[in-house]
Image 1 (cartoon, rainbow, N blue to C red):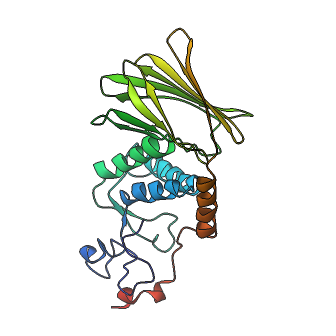
Image 2: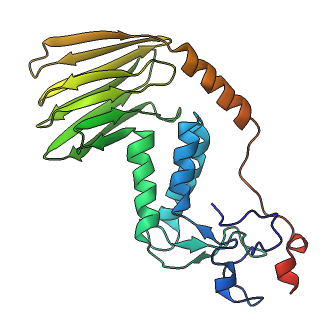
Image 3: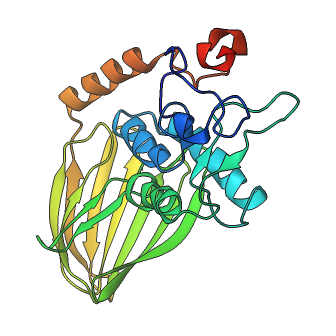
Amino acid sequence: MASLDRHHPFFYPFHLTPHYHKDAAYHNGAVWLCLNGIAMQRMIEAGQEETAYLLFKNMNWQALNLGVVGGLCENMDAYPHEGADWATLTGAYLQAWSNAEHLRVWYQYFLGIRPDLINNTLTLAPRIPAEMTSLNYHINVGEGRIEATFARGLETTYRYAFKHVGLKVEIDLPSFELLVVDVEPNTELILKQVDDELSVILSDAQGQVLKRIAATVSPSRVEQAKRNDRVMKGVAFAKPMGLENHPVVKQ
């Protein structure tokens, strides 16, 4: 996420260059990795998780192959220098907010686990990218823990085991009406989806079914998703322009 539109006359394609002082580019072109978090969140909220995942995977590659292994830097040049395959990393070499936003969007918007302990609520809104067919993960919530699995096949299943934590849970899956379920500690919530059918099953620690709900498709949410797809159709990540298009380089 660059800090200025590349078509702007004051766009600086490089953060570090002999052409001008680095602070001129700091907020006028230099990439801020922390902004990728809210960008991916907004894509996911608009039903474009596959586009968001392209950016997420790109950041994964950077974290594992560039700079501090396992971490992300603060800034980058907006463009690679001539002859380079990747933009130069700049700013703080290991930046907390870059890493925090990368992790936040994974847990809160791809996995879709968003606790609000002040109000004793939890939103479950998974948006798992298509290439992932199974997941096994956990997240600590307050004094407890939620252990979760995901499996995609003819039937898509989301399974959440609430260990020592109970919450009012809002279930948000694309195309379906929102559901609210009161979940007691040490129970298990299972979501099973086949095409346009979604069942929600709440069981106790012994596997005894406590509640079973059949979710209904929301025509308004289906139509909104179609509108979002029409708006986002053809939207692509920006590519570098020739340096002759940037007046600041000629100064």
